[in-house]
Image (cartoon, rainbow, N blue to C red; front, side, top):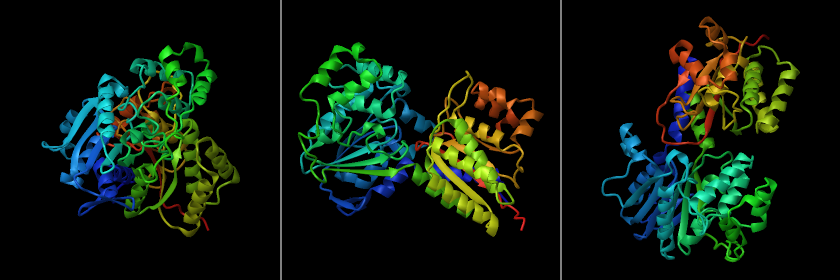
Length: 496
């Protein structure tokens, strides 16, 4: 029989498999003769399909899209991360590369995930392709996480460096992602619906692999196909809020004061001109993880796909949920209250927590057997040290500490946290697995959990502990829909 640890790894692998770039396109883009079907809408193919894309997972998405539409593809341009083709080849992922005679041109840029001259050149080419289309044409737009840095198109006379400096200063001052995007859109030719406007009067179909909590279309890659009204006053008020108004370059002020700044009121969006469809997301990954968990003998329960907030609060929540689930009798009311209080801090609705606790309670009273609690999202880590690690390994380490005193597997819970992109911080691991035995195991090997946590050094901790056997190292996954959290609860003997 497979161990709890092995089954947790299997469930994580199913989550990643569900959001592979080629498989999400295969499910989302259906060919029926000379028609293509997307999200219930049909479009006629008459050798009139053009393709653009930008993002870390877009190469595999484009290869599959070209396979599906075949000769109807006229041409395409995609902007992808520097070195990605070589990396995919090296890892034996040829199925995610374009064929030799492809009609799609690949442009690599955005080294270190920052917009650069190469990415700007790709954005210019994409803009030119879109601008030449007629109402007979279809423009297929492929978007994934990392797309924002791969599509930089500052409005002249703003330079790429000036735009970068302005957004960096805002980020350093503590601006929210919404505020940063407001500014990015105002200074960009393509973000905030700019690409969709360039493509008028062609029909635009955007297929999106989401790496943002809640899948807000205007935030993923800064929404190049989602028309957003730009109000110069709104943008200036963001700079004012962070006391940066007086240090803005003259070029930025010129663009913000320009009467031609894009406003959606000038050109009302033609109905049906743009179709935006999320074809892969954290919710899809969790759904497929749940199916695999069921095959492995667990009852799957999805808590929420949008866990966020401080990693310490998230760890406490999972620790309390484990205690709630593993209690042989009715859990004390302070555990239930603690769970509800923490939920507010980490983006989980009380309704979702009550529903989850009800299922766990029924599992205990009716003796259902094992449960697999699944969640997703992207917690944050406050850096206090100089160690190596990432939010998933730190979360696993903190949950291991919270589980102390409970039974060890196979009679106690197992927790896994992993990044679907396969890389947690600057390490080779995606995350780690932990259980109530962590504290004893680390003490026996002379590793002090608290000092590793103080130094944000979770990767070093898990590498040294039992020769790294608790690390989760799936290698290159070619996708990203944030993180997967999993709590496996064994059957709890009920004291009736």
